[in-house]
Length: 273
Image 1 (cartoon, rainbow, N blue to C red):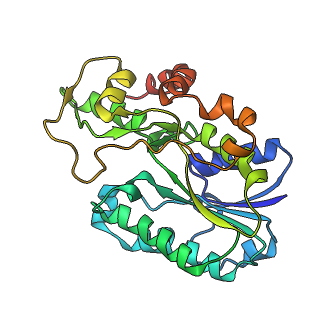
Image 2 (image 1 turned 90 degrees about the horizontal axis):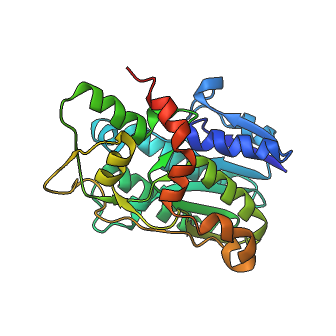
């Protein structure tokens, strides 16, 4: 199979790496190799992919407040341009957020993802899949992830405060693995929206204590820009069609997955100054 992965962040890199290990033909489009939207997408079309993965992001909730235009381009315009111009036989995979489940929408960041979801549904394009994910972390670009940021912040401040909003920490290597395993179970000429996350959740405060291995303080109120309680779990079609294949992957909790990667992360965090 021929895959184009747009974006070389933690998720894009994890997808590309796993696909290459399985001998797929992969082309990565990223600012790191000279690609920048809204430049021409002709290189993507010339590659004649079977699958296109849109993993590129525009930034954080805070960044969306300061400059919303990149979020419109990358979260809305790019997926819609691909949906309307790709051959309908090509599988288009896009990523949304657990923030989209929150009502009412609390941030411009969430609004950009909800708009993408609704717009793609309205195109009625076959072979179009949206995956809601949340609280991603990976070691390709650790400085972009919560564990790195909270450790960096703890070194700059005598006291660290974290909110009690619940999240489901999700490692990008786990996410890439389960998405690729699920490809053969996607209905042909169909489209759908799926939740993809490990089992259970925790507060940001609890995850921060686990990362820093120390007691820290919590805000008296939740972060009002983010959902209070996220626990989306996983409902990919492969869970029903081949439950044995997915049992060892989807049945794991976020905490089990964190412990499996904790030593690697502690080594990364120990180097922060």
